Image (cartoon, rainbow, N blue to C red; front, side, top):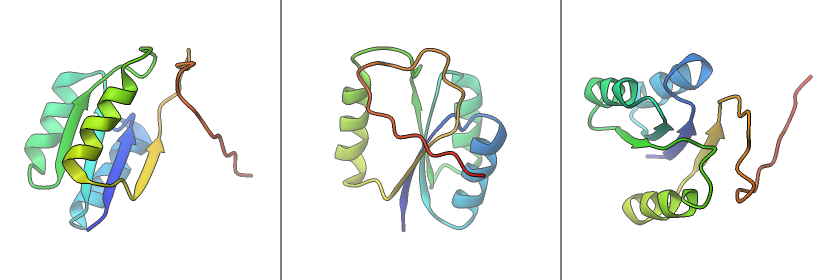
Amino acid sequence: DMNILITGAASGIGHNLWKHYVSSGQNVIIVGRRKELLDNMARNFPEHTHSVLYYISQTGSFDNVLGNILRGYGRIDLAGSLRFIKNINSNMNFVSTYGT
């Protein structure tokens, strides 16, 4: 099984990717700021969904969040940030890829 990390999974493309991966039996860690949506997703697929409440523009704490995830899962095989970020956290390293 793969361990997949998706930020912005509560709606849109991220939500559809979460649904695809958990339906195929993958472990998906969903990160977002809307607790009620994350909790609902985790209730739908509890054996494959781990939700983490976090607002990505917070500074300084994502290292702790990621460290806790890695301690729990051992590795992340695939990660995607699928949320428009108005104010990117300057403490995070982002690589952006734009398709044509």
